[in-house]
Length: 224
Image (cartoon, rainbow, N blue to C red; front, side):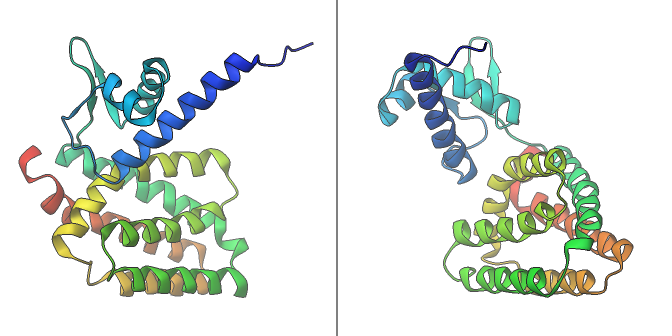
């Protein structure tokens, strides 16, 4: 018979999760920049907990690819080179293309209407700053790949979005708002309406791959 976790174990797990989510949010929003060193004592004091859960959170963030644990330097915010950004988008294009193909049987009047609503929210949020637009953009894509019904695929795509999100926010700050974003996402919805899975997959892959060069131009000129 399996033993139930002790109150101490539950408390430690809760503290680690709190630290992890706190740091994940800060990294996604660009509060910490690539190369910044994360000091466990400072973060623990900020959150109001001991250093141990923060160190455990560092390990989880390292497995996500958001930070690097280095001897004598501790935890350092990871940075992507231009080639790594390009590779991330190449992988995303394949996985999200597959997700679109798998999601096609779920496309109906209700799901398409929800996508239209998500696109409208994205468009409106474009006037309020990068955090809001990028979050709405993520919601739009997450809704589509979530319809694939493949939990492992969904987790892999989500992890790639997580790694690239800080760079998306940097890009948005430079360009204010991608002028072609509305049209590209409308084209994607039209492809989903067509019922042609191969066509919808191709449109999604092209959409994602087309973003990489623009993002590299603005987000990592010093790291090429």
